[in-house]
Image (cartoon, rainbow, N blue to C red; front, side):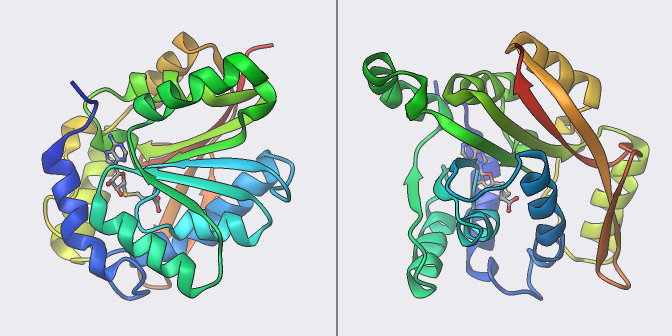
Length: 242
Ligand code: SAH
């Protein structure tokens, strides 16, 4: 059985067309992107010349921005329409990004022979998995697979949503029902992930947390900012335990 939830993927298939519309369903992601890109660039000590894997890349908002910063990007996702949007958009913008419709578990399996032959140097310097863990049946399997694909001194980034009343009020009630920024039903509260759960899964995968930050949004100004309040949306960086 694959670690996918078809109902979740269907939501993204439906939203694919508006992926690159700055005023569409992904407006908040467009507004968030510069902030998360600078977080990633800073924590990973730059992206120039780095080999990057973007897991659950969707229509490619983050993948493209990392490619523009000099990274050699592979983007994987299991929804076909968003991936097609990503491929077309990269082509139109003259960016070379390797997009593949595959799970991280199968991708890892495909790479195993290569790593056995050529070693860790073939692995990724940076792996990003943003806004995706809360849409899969088994997030721990994603995390464990990511770790196997990372160079010993590489950096992994995860972002997700805390399972708190505040996150429900902001992300489900606020963004989906009141402000109608996202289609109703985009998020399932029960699948939100507490920081302690993320840290435990990372610990099981022998990853250690470098930094964790909450990100916050003012829908009136469209501004995002980071601080140490992780009670709703948050992102974190990890390294392999020395
Ligand atoms: N990471 C992107 C998109 C987030 S939307 C960004 O932050 O800009 C979540 C994405 O995860 C969707 O494109 C969806 O198709 C993908 N996804 C969900 N489950 C997946 C799985 N098991 N494997 C790969 N991609 C998956």
